[in-house]
Length: 318
Image (cartoon, rainbow, N blue to C red; front, side):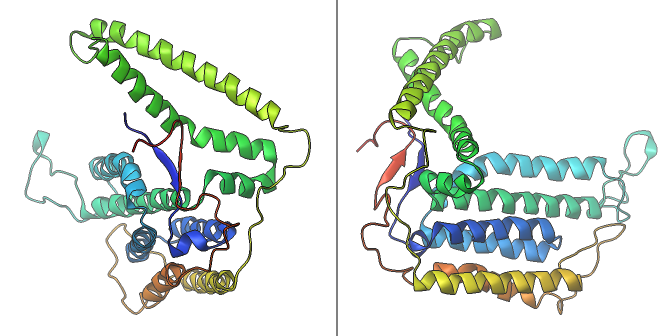
């Protein structure tokens, strides 16, 4: 059975940083992806995220998100090329379509679709990196600043889909061992064979919700102020990373004020002014600096899951 890991603590520099700084770093990536429109700046953000994931050894988490994002990215590009008529440079000026008209496919529409797809890929990758670096417990503690019940509900919602997928794979394997083949035959036969899986999945979900409610009641959830198992420490490396993020914010703000982060796709593609691309390597360097160094020494009390794994359900298979 395929198990879906949510968080794996590793002996890498980024895992040693304060979780608030990790949240600020990825929030900055999301804001920069929304602020910048220039494909060169967006590409620099994506490359920085790839470096972050390589340094933290979390590329496997990114691949899981890419399997969902790549079809969506391709769909965005094709949709924009087929239906956008704002461009002026035809891709096939000598090719005629139905009715003797020139095919209205433009390079501007292709470039704009690619730019928007790149922005979406940066946003999805930043979210993937955050959830791979910050444990669910720390995420709950961070979101708890805005309300404990809201944070708990949000955290449960994030794990709902992968948890249901894991249960689905487990139930499907059990049904297959019993000789139930629901992937062949006609549509009605497949639906009929799939109904037992749905019923078992619903039953296990209800049982899990009851068990969770009993566990929350036994732990006194909502009866008072939330207690902490350990105290997060602030180290010298955290101060340096904080100053680094402040410099990143100031530089990014200056880029937006100067208009260097904007790019015009329509009615014709704008030529790239490489003088305006000067801040790109600096922004990229400021984003990857937190990956360097040892990230602080561990005293044993701040490692929530030291070299361990947290799975949605069950224990990891050896």
